[in-house]
Image (cartoon, rainbow, N blue to C red; front, side):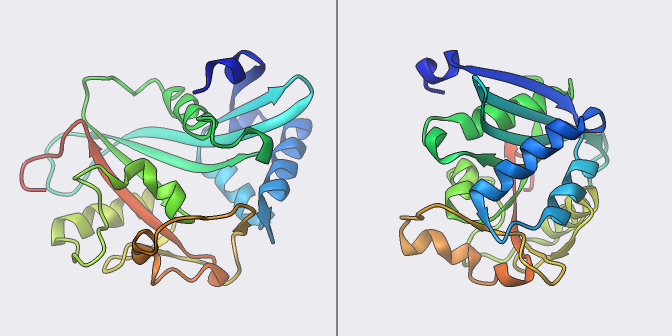
Length: 225
């Protein structure tokens, strides 16, 4: 995170169950600022599903927010409960982009769960709207999906479990989260990315509200992954 920007921001981490009406208004305004055709029902559903939200202001100006959570969950073919990180929607106002605020706010919301330990293995999950958001995981060798590679049976099983945690429907062949018939929204940003980064999104129908589920292990994957 750009340290000079961070010094000027005031950040609160809030349980989504404790959001005030004023908080909710700010969050919905940021959603409208960052997405065309912003689907506020989708945002409200996310606020009910994920427990923590990080909200940043620059004095009186809202700069961005991120939803996140982490849970201990059983996963297929694994004997012990695993830490599953559930990244949620993140909206950063245009004046505060490309400064590291996206990752900073997401990390704050997830850490509030109290489950994140640097040395512990974690399955990191997120629903991606476009290739820029996928870059957070793209270079992790354990990431699923990878364009041109069919997920293994085990990876599909774990994908379905993650979909249950998000309460969404998943196509296990493509890892497309199937939308509910209307757009989530279209990011108000110029996406200057190579064509190859769009390839994993070829089956994503944003007009239907689809997104791409990405999962990856850190610091390493279990044997056989």
